[in-house]
Amino acid sequence: MIRWRKGTVEDIRREWPGAVELNVSIGGDGTRRALAYPALVGRPEPGDTVLLNTTALAMGLGTGGYAMV
View 1 (cartoon, rainbow, N blue to C red):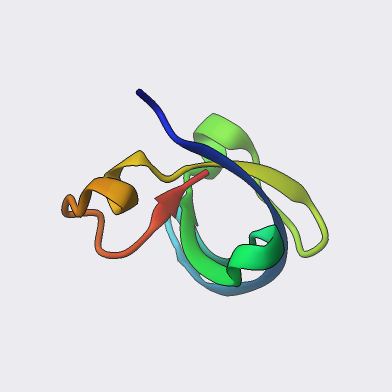
View 2: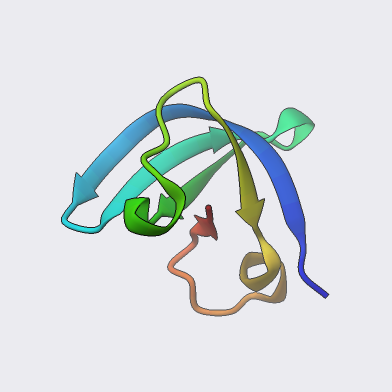
């Protein structure tokens, strides 16, 4: 089962060709680091609402600690 969470982009941590690292606020669950691939999902900006796939984080898989936009 895929675990989805809705969050709000707080800020852009850093970026490199093809990817953007974000801080995303998830309601009462604090802030998570998230990774977006702009070619697939567009470029998230602070204040944007994003849908995060948190399945791998919840299962302890090797995402480097990122939720995926």
